[in-house]
Length: 153
Figure 1 (spheres, one colour):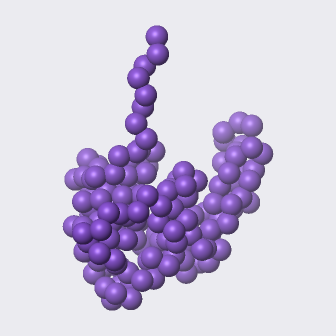
Figure 2: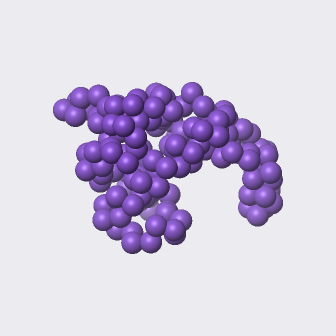
């Protein structure tokens, strides 16, 4: 399937795309509001709730603004390369987990429920604007994705 045709079909089928799709598909996270969508041989993630999608978008936008230095990116509007998007998503969620739970704890390899975690954080910190973003950005900076193996000759 041609890439442009796939993207067009995907947007038509999945009108409420999950903004944490990369981290969900790579199994670093789970979400009670996520539903897997299959098109041809590819997978995507559909968000079951407008409210959940809006709060995820707000969190990701706030994270992106706060993490500009850690991501070495000044433009908030440009599309992030896959590795940086993964650092922002997975690292940010691991940092959020630590903010809600114990800061001294080791962050989990898999955040079980993004929606539940965001709701806990909103209740605990009285909204997403009041999160301890310094802690979240530490986890964004610390996150290392899958490392490449040695080159084969």
